[in-house]
Image (cartoon, each protein chain N blue to C red):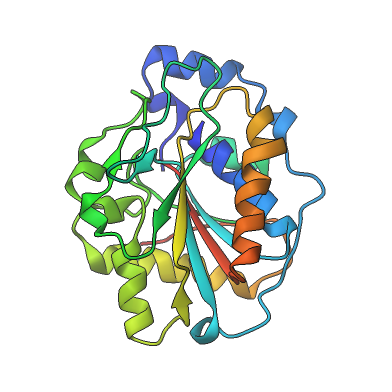
Length: 162
Length: 82
């Protein structure tokens, strides 16, 4: 587990001063899974700033953070994904070595092959999590992705930070 | 910030009727945001699935996270014991 205390001073001061409680999720939404995992369709979401060859990179120059997302196609070769996260708060070497560390597509493909889960969606979604002002994310881009997943009849979303 | 953003995206997805579960690397943030279901993992920032090129560990983390989908007494936040 990472803690604020392990961070560089500038990151630590920022995290201690940031009004996280303003974004407390209330009431807690609850959508129970209504089928066994072995029949469920799964989509992966990461905030690792991954994108595919040919897609526009995330915009690191937006001060409050880039709330946009990239669609990752379900048949992508995992290691061919690019990582463009702007944060200096984490060590980027791990994800460079193995993209499954943040978007475990190959692990889920193995679980589909083993019939442990039903299927993987034909697309997944990537954000760049370094968003200080999440208004557009909350009101626009996160609901957009949610609606696309609903359209795809996804049963489970599995999300990873960096 | 990523841990907060994951929680906010997660809530948006759960709200449209899809079950969600997330990994968290920063308990201090996730416990304030309170996403529907989160698994705290004992790794540093940038390493949500533990280690690169360690499929066994990555899969154990995924399976533990997916096991939280059995629970609907939300929010539920629990530790990955390794």
